[in-house]
Length: 227
Image (tube, rainbow, N blue to C red; front, side, top):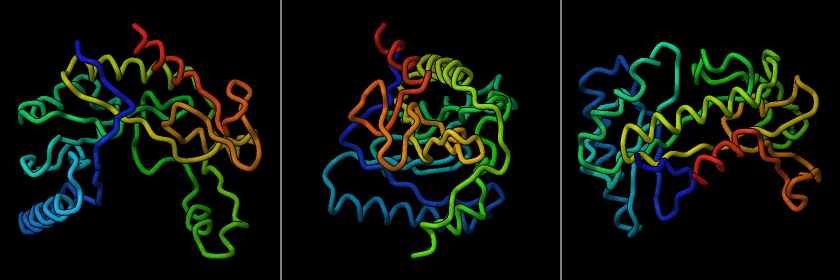
């Protein structure tokens, strides 16, 4: 069994918006030309290894980069073929990096996976990014789901095992939104992260010098790699 890794250095990860599933041949071809130019431009200024974070259905010329990158989230509809979907990428002969995977932090995500853009309210997200006035807009959730760190942790532990069984697939989990004691504003419930981050001057009790606190998934990952 290989070891999936969540912390990795020395790689440049390139991510852009890919063509849609219904993209025609012309658009797909143009996208291939773009990736060819992008890879060449990066290599002119960067001497390290590079990869490209694709979606599972994308057709990519993987000889352009040093490793295959793929965002591969769990979904109830693909539970019986989650691992098999990685096989064509492993067959390229390049190292395979699962650049995004994991579960959000609320009850029911084991069924929904990463469907859609999440539960963060899009209106407040947009307004929050506006210059000057954005700082006065408080980010909120569209629907308040029950927070469930245990479910996130168990799901992540299962995915680590599945990805390990598939082959040499390092993996990444990343934070996005901060935690809040008020469920309506607790955007960390929409996070895939291993820690809940704080805003302002609030700090953790486990690591007092840090503005974040480990979630149950953090310990699951620590135990997984301690074996």
